[in-house]
Length: 126
Image 1 (cartoon, rainbow, N blue to C red):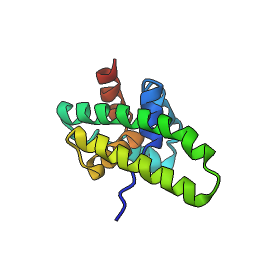
Image 2 (image 1 turned 90 degrees about the vertical axis):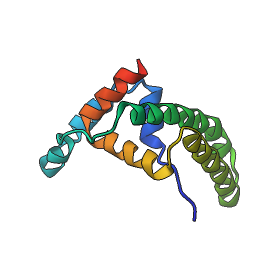
Image 3 (image 1 turned 180 degrees about the vertical axis):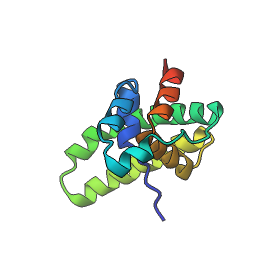
């Protein structure tokens, strides 16, 4: 079974220094969504967040490395092969940082929903 890495937010946030992550989360907050976003930050340790930051940086580099290859793929089969190669490399990068893909994706999702957590990660990146 293939475990896809969720890269969009991670790569984007790391690439722009996590500066607008909290703003994006706050702008998208409405009604019930706002309650979820303003909930207390998950209880991630600094060590866990450091691993996430390191893995995210590696995933962002891999994403940028493979983007032109995906764009240059002429058909769906070739594109899928390139995406599979990229995913394997990203999974390896996450594992090299001592995380599972599920942990990485869970932290990524928590970042999307919690500006307080974004602020903690921003401090680690600076």
